[in-house]
Image (cartoon, rainbow, N blue to C red):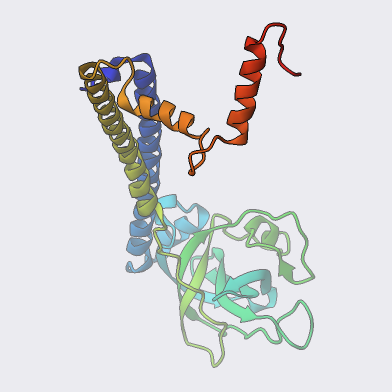
Length: 303
Protein backbone atom coordinates (compact mmCIF):
# COMPACT_ATOMS: atom_id res chain seq x y z
CA UNK A 1 0.00 0.00 0.00
CA UNK A 2 1.22 3.50 0.85
CA UNK A 3 3.44 2.58 3.81
CA UNK A 4 6.45 3.86 1.87
CA UNK A 5 5.13 7.41 2.38
CA UNK A 6 6.39 7.18 5.98
CA UNK A 7 9.97 6.82 4.75
CA UNK A 8 12.44 9.69 5.20
CA UNK A 9 12.67 10.20 1.45
CA UNK A 10 8.95 10.58 0.85
CA UNK A 11 8.40 12.71 3.96
CA UNK A 12 11.17 15.01 2.67
CA UNK A 13 9.47 15.28 -0.72
CA UNK A 14 6.14 16.07 0.96
CA UNK A 15 7.75 18.84 3.03
CA UNK A 16 9.27 20.38 -0.12
CA UNK A 17 5.89 20.20 -1.90
CA UNK A 18 4.18 21.86 1.07
CA UNK A 19 6.78 24.66 1.14
CA UNK A 20 6.38 25.23 -2.61
CA UNK A 21 2.56 25.27 -2.31
CA UNK A 22 2.73 27.72 0.61
CA UNK A 23 4.95 30.02 -1.46
CA UNK A 24 2.48 29.84 -4.36
CA UNK A 25 -0.45 30.68 -2.08
CA UNK A 26 1.49 33.61 -0.63
CA UNK A 27 2.23 34.96 -4.10
CA UNK A 28 -1.41 34.45 -5.10
CA UNK A 29 -2.57 36.41 -2.05
CA UNK A 30 -0.09 39.17 -2.88
CA UNK A 31 -1.53 39.47 -6.39
CA UNK A 32 -5.01 39.50 -4.88
CA UNK A 33 -4.06 42.39 -2.57
CA UNK A 34 -2.54 44.31 -5.46
CA UNK A 35 -5.69 43.80 -7.55
CA UNK A 36 -7.83 45.02 -4.65
CA UNK A 37 -5.73 48.20 -4.44
CA UNK A 38 -6.02 48.76 -8.20
CA UNK A 39 -9.80 48.22 -8.17
CA UNK A 40 -10.18 50.61 -5.26
CA UNK A 41 -8.17 53.19 -7.19
CA UNK A 42 -10.30 52.70 -10.31
CA UNK A 43 -13.50 53.02 -8.28
CA UNK A 44 -12.20 56.22 -6.67
CA UNK A 45 -11.21 57.70 -10.04
CA UNK A 46 -14.62 56.88 -11.53
CA UNK A 47 -16.37 58.42 -8.55
CA UNK A 48 -14.36 61.64 -8.75
CA UNK A 49 -14.02 61.88 -12.53
CA UNK A 50 -17.78 62.01 -13.15
CA UNK A 51 -18.82 63.84 -9.98
CA UNK A 52 -20.59 67.19 -9.89
CA UNK A 53 -17.98 70.00 -9.75
CA UNK A 54 -17.21 71.57 -6.39
CA UNK A 55 -17.08 75.36 -6.31
CA UNK A 56 -15.91 78.34 -4.30
CA UNK A 57 -13.90 77.89 -1.12
CA UNK A 58 -14.06 74.09 -1.21
CA UNK A 59 -12.50 74.00 -4.67
CA UNK A 60 -9.72 76.41 -3.68
CA UNK A 61 -8.90 74.38 -0.57
CA UNK A 62 -8.26 71.38 -2.80
CA UNK A 63 -5.82 73.44 -4.86
CA UNK A 64 -3.86 74.21 -1.69
CA UNK A 65 -3.83 70.58 -0.56
CA UNK A 66 -5.34 67.73 -2.57
CA UNK A 67 -6.12 64.61 -0.55
CA UNK A 68 -5.31 61.30 -2.27
CA UNK A 69 -8.99 60.33 -2.12
CA UNK A 70 -9.88 63.46 -4.14
CA UNK A 71 -7.53 63.01 -7.10
CA UNK A 72 -9.46 63.66 -10.35
CA UNK A 73 -12.23 65.44 -8.45
CA UNK A 74 -14.00 68.07 -10.58
CA UNK A 75 -14.13 71.77 -9.77
CA UNK A 76 -15.79 74.81 -11.33
CA UNK A 77 -13.76 78.04 -11.35
CA UNK A 78 -14.70 81.57 -12.30
CA UNK A 79 -12.11 84.24 -13.03
CA UNK A 80 -9.67 85.21 -15.76
CA UNK A 81 -6.65 83.69 -17.45
CA UNK A 82 -3.27 85.42 -17.06
CA UNK A 83 -2.21 84.49 -20.58
CA UNK A 84 1.07 86.46 -20.50
CA UNK A 85 2.49 83.88 -18.03
CA UNK A 86 1.65 80.84 -20.12
CA UNK A 87 4.22 78.03 -20.05
CA UNK A 88 4.37 74.69 -21.80
CA UNK A 89 5.50 71.35 -20.41
CA UNK A 90 7.65 69.24 -22.71
CA UNK A 91 7.82 65.46 -23.26
CA UNK A 92 4.11 64.75 -22.75
CA UNK A 93 2.27 61.83 -24.34
CA UNK A 94 -1.20 61.59 -25.86
CA UNK A 95 -2.33 58.47 -27.74
CA UNK A 96 1.27 57.33 -27.88
CA UNK A 97 2.51 60.56 -29.50
CA UNK A 98 4.96 62.96 -27.81
CA UNK A 99 4.12 66.63 -27.52
CA UNK A 100 3.44 69.38 -24.98
CA UNK A 101 0.86 70.50 -22.44
CA UNK A 102 -0.16 74.14 -22.03
CA UNK A 103 -0.23 75.62 -18.52
CA UNK A 104 -1.89 78.97 -17.84
CA UNK A 105 -2.32 80.76 -14.47
CA UNK A 106 -5.99 81.41 -13.67
CA UNK A 107 -6.91 84.13 -11.18
CA UNK A 108 -10.19 83.23 -9.47
CA UNK A 109 -12.84 85.67 -8.27
CA UNK A 110 -11.76 84.85 -4.72
CA UNK A 111 -8.29 86.21 -5.51
CA UNK A 112 -6.41 82.89 -5.45
CA UNK A 113 -4.41 82.06 -8.57
CA UNK A 114 -4.28 78.43 -9.66
CA UNK A 115 -2.67 76.66 -12.60
CA UNK A 116 -4.90 75.26 -15.34
CA UNK A 117 -3.65 72.68 -17.84
CA UNK A 118 -5.55 73.60 -21.02
CA UNK A 119 -4.54 70.49 -22.95
CA UNK A 120 -2.13 68.89 -25.40
CA UNK A 121 -0.22 70.24 -28.41
CA UNK A 122 1.69 68.05 -30.89
CA UNK A 123 5.34 68.54 -31.74
CA UNK A 124 5.75 71.43 -34.18
CA UNK A 125 7.21 71.38 -37.68
CA UNK A 126 8.55 74.96 -37.80
CA UNK A 127 11.00 75.00 -34.89
CA UNK A 128 12.53 72.05 -33.08
CA UNK A 129 11.55 71.70 -29.43
CA UNK A 130 8.50 73.98 -29.72
CA UNK A 131 4.89 73.62 -30.87
CA UNK A 132 3.96 75.53 -34.00
CA UNK A 133 1.34 77.64 -32.19
CA UNK A 134 -0.05 77.93 -28.67
CA UNK A 135 -3.78 78.77 -28.81
CA UNK A 136 -4.63 81.72 -26.59
CA UNK A 137 -7.17 81.21 -23.79
CA UNK A 138 -10.42 83.20 -23.79
CA UNK A 139 -10.12 86.72 -22.38
CA UNK A 140 -12.18 88.42 -19.72
CA UNK A 141 -14.40 86.57 -17.29
CA UNK A 142 -14.30 82.81 -17.89
CA UNK A 143 -15.95 79.80 -16.30
CA UNK A 144 -13.63 76.77 -16.34
CA UNK A 145 -14.41 73.20 -15.34
CA UNK A 146 -11.32 71.22 -14.37
CA UNK A 147 -10.30 67.86 -12.95
CA UNK A 148 -7.70 68.15 -10.23
CA UNK A 149 -4.35 66.39 -9.91
CA UNK A 150 -1.46 66.84 -7.46
CA UNK A 151 1.69 68.61 -8.58
CA UNK A 152 4.32 66.39 -10.19
CA UNK A 153 7.82 65.70 -8.89
CA UNK A 154 10.81 67.75 -9.97
CA UNK A 155 12.84 66.11 -12.75
CA UNK A 156 16.60 66.40 -12.88
CA UNK A 157 16.68 67.94 -16.32
CA UNK A 158 16.37 71.39 -17.79
CA UNK A 159 13.98 72.94 -20.30
CA UNK A 160 14.17 75.80 -22.84
CA UNK A 161 12.96 79.28 -21.97
CA UNK A 162 9.19 79.33 -21.45
CA UNK A 163 9.03 75.59 -20.83
CA UNK A 164 9.02 73.23 -17.84
CA UNK A 165 10.35 69.67 -17.56
CA UNK A 166 7.35 68.64 -15.43
CA UNK A 167 4.30 70.17 -13.78
CA UNK A 168 6.29 71.11 -10.70
CA UNK A 169 4.36 74.04 -9.27
CA UNK A 170 7.17 75.33 -7.05
CA UNK A 171 9.34 75.70 -10.14
CA UNK A 172 6.47 77.40 -11.97
CA UNK A 173 6.05 79.86 -9.10
CA UNK A 174 9.69 80.96 -9.49
CA UNK A 175 8.83 82.39 -12.92
CA UNK A 176 5.96 84.51 -11.53
CA UNK A 177 5.84 87.67 -9.45
CA UNK A 178 2.65 86.65 -7.63
CA UNK A 179 1.78 83.58 -5.50
CA UNK A 180 -0.04 80.53 -6.83
CA UNK A 181 -1.67 77.52 -5.18
CA UNK A 182 0.96 74.75 -5.18
CA UNK A 183 -0.94 71.72 -3.88
CA UNK A 184 -2.68 70.82 -7.14
CA UNK A 185 -3.49 71.95 -10.66
CA UNK A 186 -6.58 71.55 -12.83
CA UNK A 187 -6.99 69.77 -16.16
CA UNK A 188 -9.47 71.78 -18.21
CA UNK A 189 -12.35 69.90 -19.83
CA UNK A 190 -14.79 72.78 -20.47
CA UNK A 191 -14.51 76.55 -20.92
CA UNK A 192 -17.22 79.19 -21.22
CA UNK A 193 -16.88 81.11 -23.45
CA UNK A 194 -15.19 78.51 -25.65
CA UNK A 195 -12.39 79.87 -27.87
CA UNK A 196 -12.24 79.23 -31.61
CA UNK A 197 -9.14 77.08 -31.24
CA UNK A 198 -7.98 75.22 -28.18
CA UNK A 199 -5.39 72.57 -27.25
CA UNK A 200 -6.54 68.96 -27.52
CA UNK A 201 -8.26 67.58 -24.45
CA UNK A 202 -6.07 65.21 -22.46
CA UNK A 203 -6.74 61.48 -22.31
CA UNK A 204 -8.82 59.98 -19.54
CA UNK A 205 -6.93 58.09 -16.81
CA UNK A 206 -6.12 54.45 -17.38
CA UNK A 207 -8.87 52.20 -15.98
CA UNK A 208 -7.21 48.86 -16.77
CA UNK A 209 -6.92 46.65 -13.70
CA UNK A 210 -3.94 44.80 -15.19
CA UNK A 211 -3.13 41.05 -15.14
CA UNK A 212 -3.31 40.63 -11.35
CA UNK A 213 -6.36 38.33 -11.42
CA UNK A 214 -4.82 35.95 -13.97
CA UNK A 215 -1.53 35.90 -12.04
CA UNK A 216 -3.40 35.21 -8.81
CA UNK A 217 -5.24 32.24 -10.33
CA UNK A 218 -2.02 30.88 -11.89
CA UNK A 219 -0.19 30.89 -8.54
CA UNK A 220 -3.06 29.06 -6.83
CA UNK A 221 -3.09 26.48 -9.65
CA UNK A 222 0.66 25.95 -9.29
CA UNK A 223 0.18 25.28 -5.57
CA UNK A 224 -2.52 22.68 -6.27
CA UNK A 225 -0.49 21.07 -9.06
CA UNK A 226 2.39 20.51 -6.65
CA UNK A 227 0.20 18.17 -4.56
CA UNK A 228 -1.26 16.59 -7.69
CA UNK A 229 2.28 15.80 -8.86
CA UNK A 230 3.14 14.32 -5.45
CA UNK A 231 -0.02 12.17 -5.52
CA UNK A 232 0.78 10.95 -9.05
CA UNK A 233 4.35 10.05 -8.06
CA UNK A 234 3.03 8.14 -5.04
CA UNK A 235 0.56 6.24 -7.25
CA UNK A 236 3.38 5.26 -9.61
CA UNK A 237 5.56 4.12 -6.70
CA UNK A 238 2.70 2.04 -5.32
CA UNK A 239 2.27 0.42 -8.73
CA UNK A 240 6.00 -0.38 -8.99
CA UNK A 241 6.02 -1.81 -5.45
CA UNK A 242 3.04 -4.05 -6.29
CA UNK A 243 4.74 -5.33 -9.45
CA UNK A 244 7.95 -6.10 -7.53
CA UNK A 245 6.00 -7.98 -4.86
CA UNK A 246 4.19 -10.03 -7.52
CA UNK A 247 7.47 -10.94 -9.24
CA UNK A 248 9.06 -12.00 -5.96
CA UNK A 249 6.06 -14.18 -5.19
CA UNK A 250 6.29 -15.76 -8.66
CA UNK A 251 10.02 -16.45 -8.17
CA UNK A 252 9.40 -18.10 -4.81
CA UNK A 253 6.69 -20.28 -6.31
CA UNK A 254 9.16 -21.45 -9.01
CA UNK A 255 11.94 -21.99 -6.49
CA UNK A 256 14.08 -19.15 -7.88
CA UNK A 257 16.24 -16.87 -5.79
CA UNK A 258 15.64 -13.87 -8.06
CA UNK A 259 12.46 -12.55 -9.72
CA UNK A 260 11.82 -13.69 -13.27
CA UNK A 261 12.74 -10.37 -14.91
CA UNK A 262 16.24 -10.55 -13.38
CA UNK A 263 16.65 -14.14 -14.54
CA UNK A 264 15.67 -13.06 -18.06
CA UNK A 265 18.26 -10.28 -18.01
CA UNK A 266 21.00 -12.75 -17.04
CA UNK A 267 19.90 -15.15 -19.76
CA UNK A 268 19.82 -12.41 -22.38
CA UNK A 269 23.31 -11.34 -21.38
CA UNK A 270 24.56 -14.88 -21.75
CA UNK A 271 22.84 -15.29 -25.11
CA UNK A 272 24.76 -12.33 -26.49
CA UNK A 273 27.84 -14.62 -26.74
CA UNK A 274 26.13 -16.70 -29.44
CA UNK A 275 25.43 -15.53 -32.96
CA UNK A 276 22.07 -16.08 -34.64
CA UNK A 277 23.56 -19.02 -36.61
CA UNK A 278 24.52 -20.76 -33.35
CA UNK A 279 28.28 -20.11 -33.55
CA UNK A 280 30.23 -18.37 -30.82
CA UNK A 281 31.07 -14.69 -31.17
CA UNK A 282 34.71 -13.57 -31.33
CA UNK A 283 34.39 -12.27 -27.80
CA UNK A 284 33.13 -15.64 -26.57
CA UNK A 285 35.99 -17.49 -28.35
CA UNK A 286 38.56 -15.13 -26.81
CA UNK A 287 37.08 -15.65 -23.35
CA UNK A 288 37.18 -19.46 -23.85
CA UNK A 289 40.86 -19.37 -24.88
CA UNK A 290 41.76 -17.23 -21.85
CA UNK A 291 39.93 -19.63 -19.57
CA UNK A 292 41.74 -22.58 -21.16
CA UNK A 293 45.14 -20.90 -20.70
CA UNK A 294 44.41 -20.31 -17.04
CA UNK A 295 43.48 -23.97 -16.49
CA UNK A 296 46.61 -25.27 -18.29
CA UNK A 297 49.61 -25.99 -15.99
CA UNK A 298 52.02 -23.04 -16.24
CA UNK A 299 49.44 -21.10 -18.19
CA UNK A 300 48.65 -17.43 -17.57
CA UNK A 301 46.46 -14.68 -19.00
CA UNK A 302 47.88 -12.52 -21.72
CA UNK A 303 48.20 -8.92 -20.69
